[in-house]
Image (tube, rainbow, N blue to C red; front, side):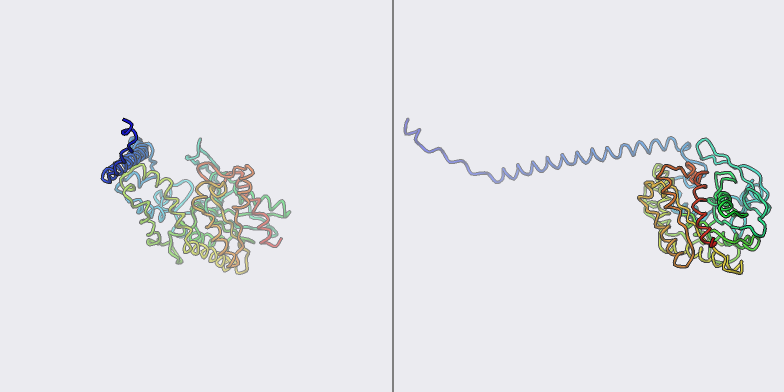
Length: 409
């Protein structure tokens, strides 16, 4: 018995390579199964909300889509790229033309797309603004927006403001537009009669403004002309027309690259109503802005502004002072998420630098308006995104010293 206890234990058996490999393979299979389950759960968790959103949009489609969103109403087979090109080439003048002479405020015009009717005394409503917004619109016999007033005496100062709806003052009464506010401020500061003529009309880009200055510079003989450039849409407004004198001619090849953007040609853009709604409501603006900041398009808009300056001086027969004010968008002023993603300040920088190189005085309103907004000022009409009364007043206050500098006062 003692001999048995004193014997050495049996040596351990040698490992079986086949068993180890089988165990390792089983472990790997289990890991792969666990990861597949995780990916499936993750995918299901992501796709389920999208599926529910798609179902909701399908059910609510007739209530979600607005009558103006014709590409969505045409059905999912309509190319969003082609619709975006059509929208870029089509302006309010085309809409006004369908009214004939029946539109209460505007009339179509072959040389400038549309113009303000003369001798107006009416109101206009912005229905998209929560609660609605009604504002007063008057015009004189020349089709210039009011308040209607007599021309100043010979010793008075005449300033002509040319621009789009930001100059026109969409959403505010005649007396609250920035041209009229500028008139009051300069008259008080200079202690002399001042008349600031408001030749702004909605949607006018620099191509259409050529005809505005052709008409009003000889008629009014201004001492100063202010050209207003809108960051949000003037580059796209200038896409529409060929660079040639006479009636406006479409640039049908101007926006072809928009049609092939990946956001507009993928399968979701054709088959998903939720995707189409989101892209048309918000995504298409991002696509436009990406196109707007391209060097070629910025150079063209700046060139048109320089040509306007030269044309004004030619019409006046002298070195008439001409300045440009850059009207920023609300997302720039309020530092919105869209500005952080798209960096649209490149439009301001591109236009300003080119104008300065050409010797055109320019006032970019973004820094002063952003400073006011940071201090708590509300400068834009909700949803509509034009300057409200406070915004128009702020613009006039920033413009007053710029005007005096141009006039040498």
